[in-house]
Amino acid sequence: MRTALERRGVAVVVVPGEVFLAESSAGWKVRPVLKTESVLRPDDRSLTAAADVLNQSSRVTILAGAGCAGAHGELVKIAAALKAPVVHALRGKEFVEYDNPYDVGMTGLIGFSSGYRAMEHCDALLMLGTDFPYRAFYPEGVPVIQVDIRGEQIGRRVPVEVALVGTVRDTIDALLPLLAMKNDSEHLDRMTTHYRRARARLDRLATEGSGDSPLHPQFVAATIDRLAADDAIFIPDVGTPTIWAARYLHMNGKRRLLGSFTHGTMANALPQGIGAQASQPGRQVVALSGDGGLAMLLGELITLRQQHLPVKVVVFNNGALAFVELEMKAAGFVNYGTDLDNPDFAGIARAIGLFGASVGKADELEAALEAAFAYDGPALVDIRVARQELAMPPKISLEQAKGFALYTTRTILSGNGDEIIELAKSNLRQLVKE
Image 1 (cartoon, rainbow, N blue to C red):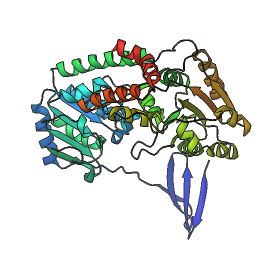
Image 2: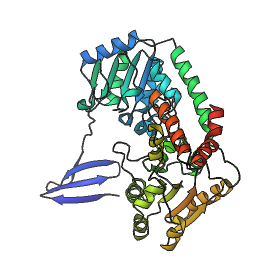
Image 3: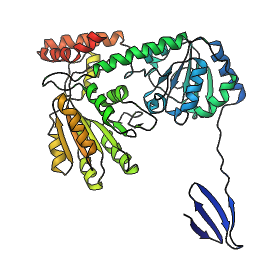
Image 4: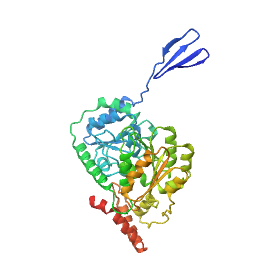
């Protein structure tokens, strides 16, 4: 198939996969347009300085972010050369964790212990395409090498010994020949073993629960992960849905994980899902909405109908602004002003012409999700999940421990001891398995 556009005696002939120019005034003289690829890497002196630091270090850890998009193969190569565990930032999850034997999970407030330990015990940190903001989770007293295509990002979070401005792919390609292949894998082996233990503990928390109790959100996220399409686009709301997405959704190189990860804007899942579905009409889009987030922009459900967008909205309905409650607990405050008196979200969905289902028991979950995912149109599944589920960070500060103790004391004294009992019931299995 060929198409031609003529203007001022020159035609552009488009052939699938190729582009040619043709001069029509002298007949059709066709010549190919040469393709070029830009390369953006640091200067040789900077690369040598970085290689010197890495060659002299015996316990290198890599922190990889969204800048690793398109550089998965290069990332694995440099991790192999350095025998380095790879910690991924949230925005780097979709580009880093799949098909990567060196990945050891996340660190930060919503990460888990193996990622934190890999950062804590390194003697050099190589940052690739990330502006990881949580300063308390950086290692202390070790040299840091940071690679970023945007030079203004380098050194914003932690002092940097060597700054490398360039793309991750091109910088690694230029750096690899300067590195001495490491043979000692003790640091890597320790951290990957730690990761397997941490991953197993997290997976054990994704249990069905029992009876009529609200579902564990970990179980809901793990079930979504298992049933969703291989190329699904997941968009979690800011708050606890982001935690469960980060810990229980598995990337494979085709799936996408999008969200308001930089700005932390509440109620992002549904409107971003609308945009993702409009731009990718053939793909499954799953919005992991909090009940507070959905209620804030409830009218966007009508947009799904008006635009005939088959977004699948999964509501983690815990009747509260749960992440705010977690922050209040850590600060020692009795929860106040965080209750949500929610309507029947599934009923609202059905009333406006969407598929709607409610889930109150674990044995109802899989059938409801399968029906929603198979439905040819927009669908909403409203799931009652445990309100008091704790998402334990990999590092608990003394101030947070004191704050939580103060919260429990104040809550009991205020006459809300039943809240502490519910908290203990929801998290007893977590404390025992840790």
